[in-house]
Structures are given as C-alpha cells and as structure tokens.
Image (cartoon, rainbow, N blue to C red; front, top):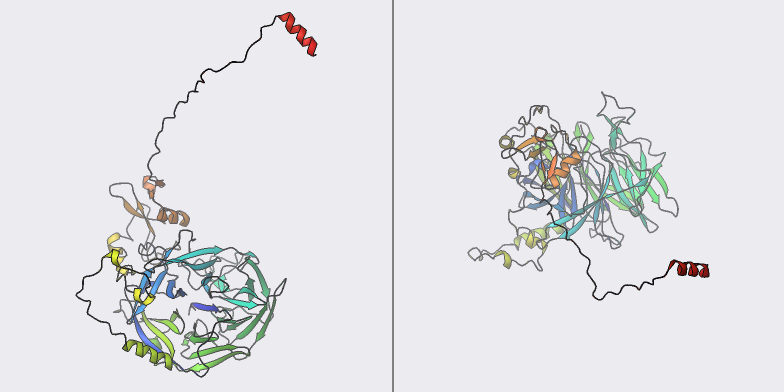
Length: 558
C-alpha cells in the first residue's frame, strides 16, 4: 500500500490564546461533499493550505489547463458542495511545480511578518522528486477580494537536505530565535546503486535531522543515536523548542512501529544543541491527517495501522509543559463506503475541519473516482452557535424583481468576506467541462510521421502532465495544427517559455523553432548634421617672418 498524505505542521506565536477549555467535548460530524465539476483535481497526495482565511488546493496540475495555469485553486464549501476557483500569482513569482506529498509547514504571522507556508520536496506526476524549498505568501487582494499569491524559491547553503517526499517540517523557538526542523522522508537510491531493475525503487532517507534558519539560509545536518531508522509519512507537532515525531512507516522493516520521539532544540549562540528522547506512549500509524483545534491541541484522523488495516479511531493530541498526551475521541458512524475501502486520504481545511476522500472501488457507474466527505470537530457550544446562525440567516426575497446594478454601481467598500463569496456567481469557478475534450481536440492523434504516442502505454513525461500529453500549437500551415511536445523533443524549460510568452512555434516539419512575432523596427534615416557657421568669427593673427628672423628667435629662446 502506498502511503500518501498531506501533513500540516503549525508554528504558533507565543501569545496565541487557546479558547477551548480542558473539559470541552468535541463532537465529530461527517457530511457527504459533492465536488462541482472538479473531482479530477483531487487526487492522492494533494495539499490543503490556508492563507488569509481562504483554503487553497495545491499539488494537482495537468497540461493544458487553460482555466488555471498556476495549478493552485481556492476551495469553497457551501451547502454540501465544493467548488474550485483559479488562483493567480504575482509577476515576480517563481515557477511552483506540482508537488505531491511534500513537507508543508505553516508560519503564523509574528514580528511583523505575514502568514506564509514553507514547501519542501515532494513528488511530481512524472515521478521526479524535488529538493527545492519554496516560500508561499499572499501578495495582494483585489477590489473583489480575489487572492494573488507570491512564490519565492529559498536557497540553502551548508549541509542541505536532498530530494525527498513523505517527510515533515516544523518551526521551533528557543532563546528568542526561530529555526526550521526537517526530518524523514523517502527518495530514490543513490546514483551509484541504481540499476535498470531498481531505477524507480525508493528507500528511506538517512535518519538525520536538518536544521536551517530562514533569515540567512544556513542548513546543518545532525545525527542522533535515538533516531536509528528512517521513517516516512509520520506526524510531527511542535511546541516552543520541542518537536514530537509520531508513528511513521519504515521501508527497511516494512512496519509501522509505535514510535514517539521528542526532539529538543536549543538555539544557542554559535552552534545549536539537539537532544532526543524516546517516549513509550507511541501510536502505530502512518499517513494520518492532523488538524489543529487550538494552540496546543490537535486531532488525528485516518491513516493506517498495517498494509491491510485502516486506523478507524480518532485521537486528540495535547501539548503542554509536561509533554504530550493522547485522548480518545468518539468517532462518527462511518459510512459503508469508508469502512469497506482499502485506502483513504485527505487534508486539513482549517481548524477542526478535514476533507476525507475514499475511492469508488467496484462502482463503474460512478462518474467520479472518489467519494468526498466534510469532517468537522466542534464543541457543543460551537454547534449551538452554528444552529442559531442558520436559523437567523433567512434571506429576504424582496429584491428578486428589482433591477440589478450595473457593473459600475457595485461597490466593494466595507464588504465582509462572507458577503463577497458569491459576488461573481459561477464566473471564475473551475469547470472540468471547460477543458478541451480529448475526443474533439485529439490528444491521442498521430501528430507527425514519427509520432509513437500510445494512449494505452503513455506515462507523464513533463512535470506539467497529469492525465493527457502536453501539446503545442504549430502556427505554420492553413489554420495551424497541434503536435505533441514530446514528439517535437522539446525540453520542459522551452515548453514553459513558449506557453508563457507570445512566441509562435513551428513544428519539426516546418522548421522546429520558435518565432517571436513583433513589429519590424522602423528604418529611420539618420539626420545629416552640418556644423553651424559662427558669424564674425575671428581667426588668430599670423606673423610673417623671414627665415633669418626665425633662426634668430630660435637661438634666442634656446
């Protein structure tokens, strides 16, 4: 069974207040969720982020996706439906590839810095493993509250962690400093050990702890005797200077031992000091979903106890000065589809909210590949408030027959976020039907004489491919025609440049080179500059002397 999950590790400022009292009892509710023409984008390994109160879907991108070239979508829930809206990036952002199972770490705003996310590693749809570190922040909000993101790649120096996926990142605070802790994950075998037979085989990364600061980008690796085996798809939660590693799967032993480690990081002047302690109250779990419900409270849902057994129990994790404690949480009445499915996955969509997905196994009548559920954990007081809010939200219908405002009359000043949720209606929502149909556009056609693309054996070649091959338009010929980028032997960098710019491409039968259409430069005849004559210009006087006088003056001055 392939372990795959989105891990959310939070870093909280010390002045955050947890409003949940110790005696509060959280009630778990499970509601079916219907994706509106976007189910194909929610695949195993996706990540859910929260920026400026908006839930973002990251990690899924096909080619071509004309509705969302960035591959990041805003997620909205309403009346049991889930809709996606394309999110744009600022002009100075770097390219963010589609990454599955990366390490995701949330940085809450502190010291004047905005809330942001760190994204490291991950696996692309064509099985490439990334080693890059990205910082994702909010760039701006438009007048209609449309979100624009900014993505920057962070360079690390020193002992840099290699390419991996299924690992975790956490932020720690010590002595007034902050640092990022990275641990675990899987990667391909070292280059010297890879052969044709095991080329795509993965192994556990060495059990090293990487520590780096975001201000200077310095990274260091640390080996601790307590961490003797590699682990991946584990959970990590942090409080101040401590990080707890819970569960995980080990490929070397193909097991999920009930491990629990506490890593303490002291950011001393000069070099940091790391110590690790093994705690006996671990849980045998991997690929679980964790959601924060307060400053030091988390909820664990899902995951696997073994290759053939899902973990159906829910647990509450509490961090305090004494350490870490676990409390059993009453599970809901699972549906038949959930109990009978072999796999499940999902992510945290905010505090106490989880999106859960199970495959529609043995259901060929189902158009979508997964069933989706909205899981929420609320206290009794919160559920009563929601019921009262729903009872008081009866909308008036007096404006049904009124004249709609013109575009210029719609004022956005002072609007609340919930008032602007549907201000654009269906416009801007992602719709799978808007994408070009394969049967009509011919993704599997024979684009040239040397085309060998077979829909039965095709595998993603570019990182932007998901379900269909990348194609590029040749502008030569009557009306032009589409060709496969792989058949044209285009590099991924050139393919991205052609898709972003205004260049026209000619296929190999028509030259095979991009051509930039532009207005030819205007031929300007240079002006002939004639020197101006100065009126009454006086020439220096000349003295006429005979050769004898010249010889006399020369001898005089010599």
